[in-house]
Length: 69
Image 1 (tube, rainbow, N blue to C red):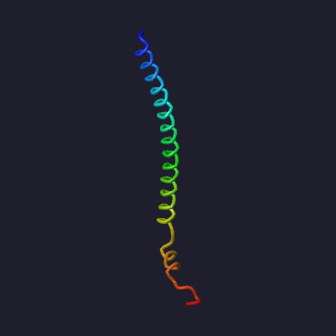
Image 2 (tube, helix red, strand yellow; image 1 turned 120 degrees about the horizontal axis):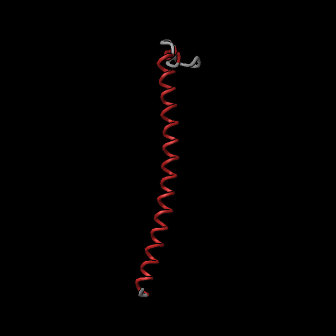
């Protein structure tokens, strides 16, 4: 194999190794983000359920002005 071909092949192998490492890092980040998104979606579902089962008069208490006004 010619020296230039060997050098080019080594360069390509190095680049592929870096790309594989970067791809693995991106995959790990994506997995963690999906887990966080799943937790947010579940919490949102819980809050919507709590809101739908809350008594109708519960929201009006927050609209009242504090006694010091």
